[in-house]
Structures are given as C-alpha cells and as structure tokens.
Image 1: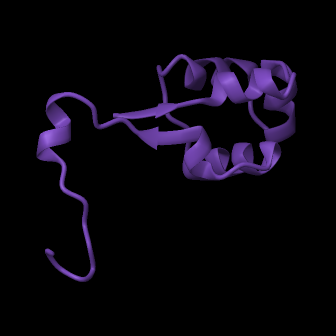
Image 2 (image 1 turned 180 degrees about the horizontal axis):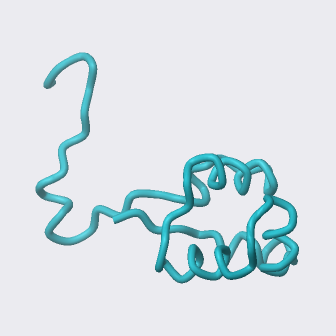
Image 3 (image 1 turned 120 degrees about the vertical axis):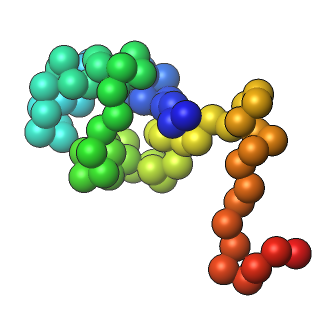
Length: 82
C-alpha cells in the first residue's frame, strides 16, 4: 500500500491545499484526495510536489509494508539472492 506524508509536509511549510494545487498545476480537490489516501497522483504530479517542497519523492510517498504484507514482500535485487 502506498501512503504519503503530503499533509504533514504541506503544513510544515505553511502552505494551503489551494496554494499547493496552484503551484503544481492541479486542483485543491485533487490535493485533498491524495492527502486523504483516496487517490494516488500520476508520477508527473508526484514529482512536481516533491520539487515544490524541495524534498525527495520518498519523503512524500512510500510503500507501507506493515503487517501481513511485510512477510510476503521480498526486495528485488539485480545481483540475485544473497
């Protein structure tokens, strides 16, 4: 499950949903939907938000692998299994 810290980061920067929306070229409703976890942004929008706040994409969005999924998810390595 992909989750986000968008709301916390936005508040830390003192930016409203409307200001962020205007800064990245979307609507306030889209920002609200992303913050509440109802939708995920397209990659381009996610990158624009990371650029807007000058943070790494992984600081805004990350894979939450807690609980039952943690045991079934195995990281991929180009070097094979260790």
